[in-house]
Length: 285
Ligand code: C2E
Ligand code: MG
Ligand code: MG
Ligand code: MG
Picture 1: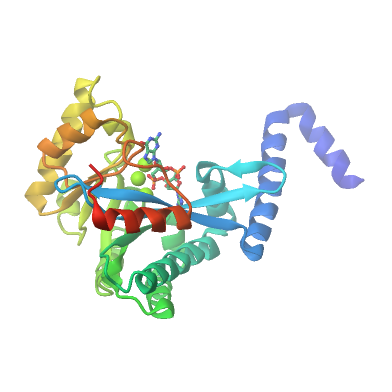
Picture 2: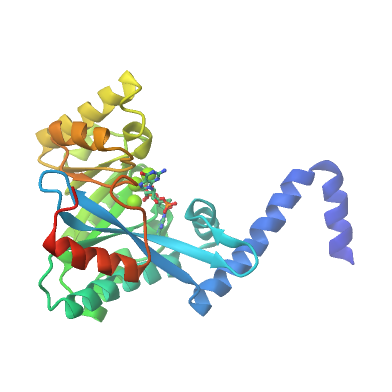
């Protein structure tokens, strides 16, 4: 009763805030349960080598099918996971699940197809968990080599503690994993600092790619990132490719890998495995 009263008086002044807080609280409760009950899934979106048209791997993307609310986007539940600390078990689950998938597909294909799976790691997860231990335990648990996995990190993971971030990346690199800077171009980028990091891939954010044909400035940014990557000896992945035209322009500009609805949407693990098997015989583009 006391609680109800409190809520009510609060509502008088800031209805929006309370509403958001309550929704967030219930989403947090549901998310905790979903994690415990195994109700989250990874879907996989193909990454395509722009030169050969062959599949080079997949990005693992978390999906949550809520019993009452239906599909909830990671854009909505990842922030809740970050604020509640659930990003730690969620992040470990994603690493383990991706590692298991690599081992399973290898076993089914007798190791005949070479592919990598990329896993997203949140800046909050990196702050709160021993991610080097999390990654190495996922690799060990499925008995796979580190170079089968790419870890996608964002620039926000590096702002507060550049020295610590460098040490962390060096440690992840010593597990032989591939490291990608996700959503590149949207955040803070200290170029002098970037050069010191053992980053393998710059992932150009979708906001630049999707509008590069109609917006000169975005196109200029894409070109700049591509030449920067070349200068630093890094590979590039462009996300959000939705047309053959964009794919072709990026290929000509020297972008290594493409990802987007033009090639394929994120799909269930079974569909992705079928995609992988089909790719063995014929190029995607
Ligand atoms: P991201 O890592 O930048 O992933 C790329 C997002 O772009 C995905 O959205 C993907 O479905 C979407 N995408 C790819 N190609 C296209 C395209 O051609 N057009 C359009 N419109 N969208 C495209 P999604 O799956 O909704 O994930 C959103 C974000 O949520 C991810 O952005 C990532 O930051 C985060 N996320 C997803 N799964 C995880 C996870 O397991 N752990 C963490 N920490 N974050 C995750
Ligand atoms: Mg990503
Ligand atoms: Mg991205
Ligand atoms: Mg993005």
